Length: 140
Image (tube, rainbow, N blue to C red; front, side):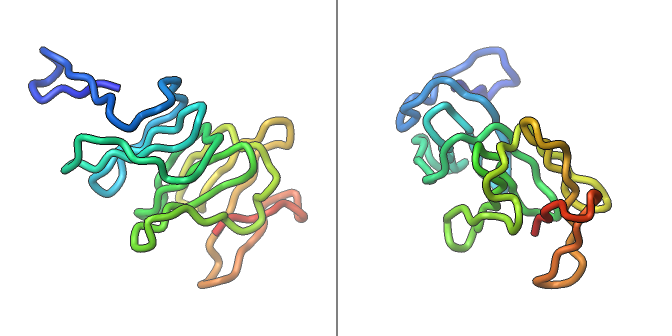
């Protein structure tokens, strides 16, 4: 991973703490960069010069929806809890290999490896509406 402070004229490596160099996905969220690597997710705060592991592995996609960072992993969808500094599993998507995430006005789309695309909607606090097919899991 490299950074530039002059619009890309010169670049400097940010090697400290990034143990796995095969970066699969990146996301900028709330003053930090999240890198999904072959060995897990690492976070680089704007004020820091060192990557730190976040405890989540196998992330293939990131997106933000309603100011929340979501990660699509080999075993489901997770949301970054800024106040708790941790990932929590999104309801109903555990066990699905998530390859793509995309926000929409209607919710959050999750593209899976071999199981289709699901749309999670926030119907009300703590409830989830399912997208077609009717037995599809939701996200929250």
